[in-house]
Length: 373
Image 1 (cartoon, rainbow, N blue to C red):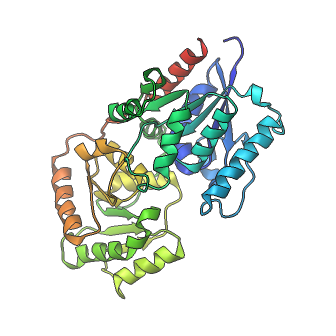
Image 2: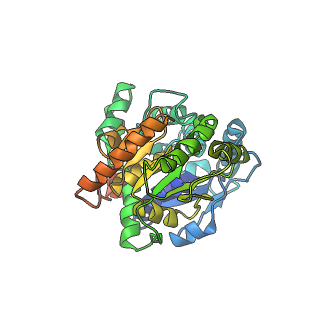
Image 3: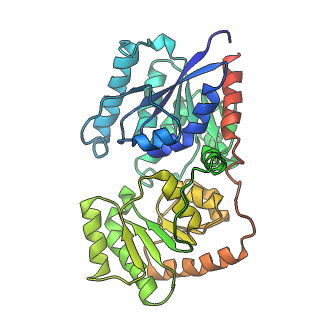
């Protein structure tokens, strides 16, 4: 390669930034690639997280209202905005100057960016490819998004043997799929080395979150279960629940408490600072959540994780620190017993199931090989 290849990173959510910043640095420091950060504006991204990671968006899509609630509108808008900036050339770069598109995970940004790249015959590279639950309604709509991205991608970068096998069984060609690990471990290892994780002042609590669309009708039951864990002395540990800002969720959560909660039940607003949130995860004794990201982070720190979902696209954690749970007191109480057993028997501070922090380097090497053909 005699000229640097322009590689477009399409992202617009906090998890995408966290999972791609090490790869971005890898390409930025190379002689082969010129990475371009494109903000899809799916979420409002705090400047704090960007400055903390020494990042800056090169260009952004126009923000629109209802972008989280109206996914059809957002996907259409983002594809039109990408056309405006690159097909019509309003960004200063023409489509022929875009040599590749990198998307991560299963967001609407990743889906729209991948389809846009495919339709414009630009190679698409999927980071964290091959995750599956085999249920289009759990999680919804992410399962469909990641299936679709895998089919249009020139290269699929899979976290584990399981995700790799999923793609092969779906008919994706073997020469398009590579086991590289998960970039979340790159991020955590880098943040540990750079001492950027913010220490939380407490320790050994139960950290709780609930936010997925498919669980919104179960919020009342969930808060009731958590409160009962304390009232029945099933646990004497403090429960810290980070309450979703949606008014309907807050109302349902309050109804589940039936007029009051235990003194060890602390309800807080969500922690938007990822570096503080990672500190909370690291200091927790146990995590109960429906979050996909927390499944990965708790595994790295060897913290037991109760997954409030029917299925998980990360089955690797079920052989390690995690269990799937129904919204049932006895089942969650049983998990509390398991968590105590797990913590008393864990021997290592970190778990490297998803990689040792070298995933981005592996992806970089594969990209170099791809363009040298």
